[in-house]
Length: 175
Image (cartoon, rainbow, N blue to C red; front, side, top):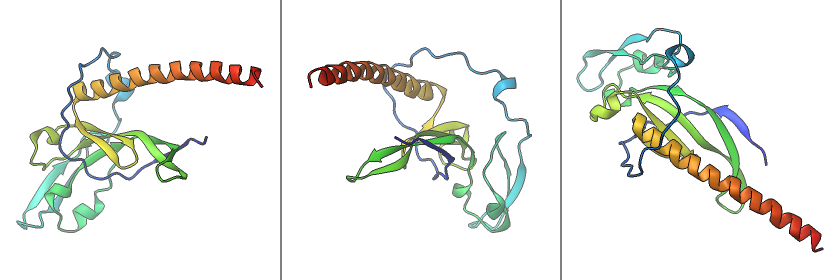
């Protein structure tokens, strides 16, 4: 099995999900010194394609989106969004009969400053569960729920790994 890591290009997040699982305890948040990007937020302007007005944008701290095309040409405010990408991991997923490397469990920190949804105007996380399949608009509690769910599944996978080792050993011994 091959695992690859790369930066992805992502699509714009959609509406916030409804999560019903209880929020599990999670480790303390990293300190500002260990997690905050060093540079100050960028400020820039663009022309609203509909009104012709020049609008100002202040990116969230650490935004690594390239806004040069938005600033250079009239743009739809709904298409303006800030993000901080994560390093992706790819696994061979067999979706069509042949394994194909696909991104799994990547995440982006996003902010859509002109969104109709007030929740999406605030920083939030989108998790790409498997390539192009997203859980979007997660606030800190929602992300903690996703992390807790994945942590439970990891415990299950570790137990399955132990069962597989025993089954393989028994199988080899019976041959």
